[in-house]
Length: 143
Image (cartoon, rainbow, N blue to C red):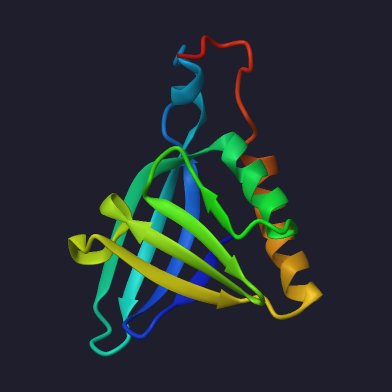
């Protein structure tokens, strides 16, 4: 399961690798951080850059799923490495800081979702991640 985006310079593949910590951790947030892996391929040189960061919480996957079919234009997360923007039939993902290639501050990538079928496929992919990485231990101590 992965998501593909591109801009003038890069083709990008984004996927969730798993939980940052195992289930023995006591803190609610530490239990629920997910590691995001981003692979950048330079469209001119073919050079590949890989970045990883624990920057999405399990419950933020639920937020993404709701956002796709909502009228909201922007979705932000607790960690500022990723931001999503929606305009008509385009989703733009903004990658910053730890997830930006070659330490550029922020870089944008777009994906056209110009049909209900594409929105459905995107929702199904998010749902697979939600099932694979459910929110862990709602009773854990929240900071």
